[in-house]
Length: 617
Image (tube, rainbow, N blue to C red; front, side, top):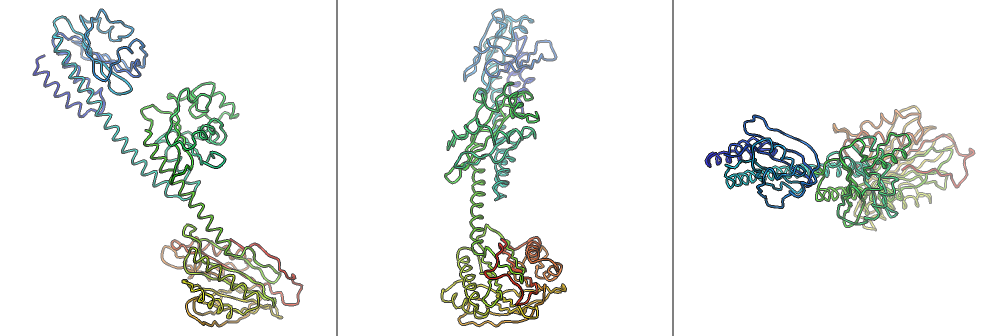
């Protein structure tokens, strides 16, 4: 084979290498030109892993149309001495001197008239090496053959490197896409438990076969979530996460170690992940019913188990850890950098959820302290309240209500709404409720109470205004009750009559905290036995459906449909209906409902102090 012919063949080989997705695809373009070299009778190549594991051998002899291909996983310990360093090594060895124990090519070479074997050994990657050799007779130009082998090996190595590089780029792109999707999924929930479950689910099976998530508590790691591609092994993982002392001790020892650690083989001895029949038997026995497969058990899996543990750190503190369980080839294990990035994103999502949970509890706790913990109860009144927080993430709201027994035997109902949310709104809410309560307990009439509250707000230079309505209910000798109502810019109360009709109480008046020296007029009417007075904030009426209609438009109909129910059912039902109705709007909803039983003065009423019932939250 002349140099020009070889040059053309080498050019075609480089072209094939640029398109190849596997190195084995170059075989025809390598073997045929080498076999066409004068004095060459056989071309044979081998692929080795872990120094001595023969994975593949391919041979093509002169005069043969098809190669001999051997795919195996045979261990050849004596071949370890042939492993090359970083640079390719070309060797010429007499066929008679080849030892079958270290040279699986020897048997093929002896079938042809070769006098020697010229072979180039070279490293493909960190996991293994390869060789490409030719059987030659005495007429061969050894220098030319050695040069062509070296050139062919250059192409093979370049092809393999390119394939690995493209694979890494594809893997990096897939990892980036997974990280982006993971962030979206994890950040889409501010519920702690749901966020933790999403952290585990996102990684399986894309990253690993199984995952466990633990939160770091003062008393140690607390298991919170687990998942696995196998339902049976998921159950086993959950049990391991909750109860396994080996894993708990390992997580506790790691503490604040930021590096991801991989454990396999002997490092897992004594753990529930050990690849031993003994461990598997012990696990089966511990499950009793036998349906809990041990994660990583070697029985039905070709690949040894590997686990990795990554610390979840956010904002300078450790919030927990995530443990991945792998049952896949080493080449498919994720890199430490990827796991660190995933852990960082998971930690931030978990920390955000934890912070939100703390904030939500703080808001709800503050909101509870701004509302009465109990409502008075007598035989005369059926009282109840309902409060629905629009969005706890925004901050504490300004809605408030109360029911106040008065010295003359009447009862005063009050409800109000401070503009806005937050600490300033909360301060005004407390001021307004307690001011009105104190005045009404002393027997002050509703109009005067509102005027004095307005004056207090102006004196305090409050930067927010508020609305409120006060209604007193005084039992009459004829079994009715006198309803006296006074409003400061607040939605008008409704009355659900005993016959099922609904009427609106006439009210009017300026907002509180806007002008000095404002007076408020009262409206009076009588209600009969089993009539119900409903006070509410605008969060109820301004709940808006997708089409734009407000709940206010259907409130009278919805209230009429609750005819015959007690105060607690009416309050809770209206709040839930408005919450379900709205497609937009995040305002709080407060309701205070009073149902007059018709018991007149002089009847055997419960003595003061009145019994108390816990107010709705």
